[in-house]
Length: 117
Image (cartoon, rainbow, N blue to C red; front, side, top):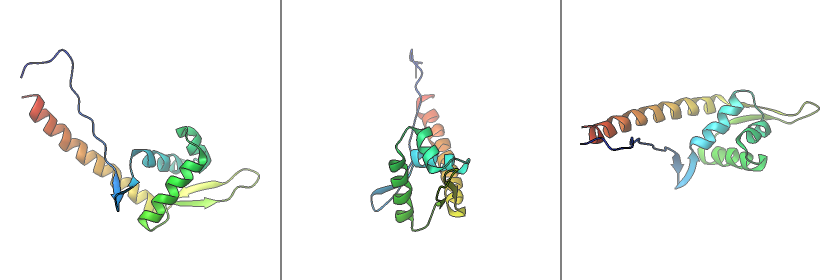
């Protein structure tokens, strides 16, 4: 196959669903990672450029669809509230990362086989 004037690259997205409804994907992963790294839900939402209400809705929907809590919340006082991830959320993030890496490796290999003969 001749080399085109531009370089082709492959991109893919992975998300998890239950009952045809999204449960977990890149945006929700970023939200949980921000919380994991010490952000409150509000601070994580601000960093992502989304309203607090939307971040809260994402977390609530994930927890309901998965059937277990992902975020420990402590209501704010003078210094504001805090949030941390549950052990189940940390495990979910680890598994999702492993899934993404494994799938990306397979996709990269197939792409190379097909387009770089």
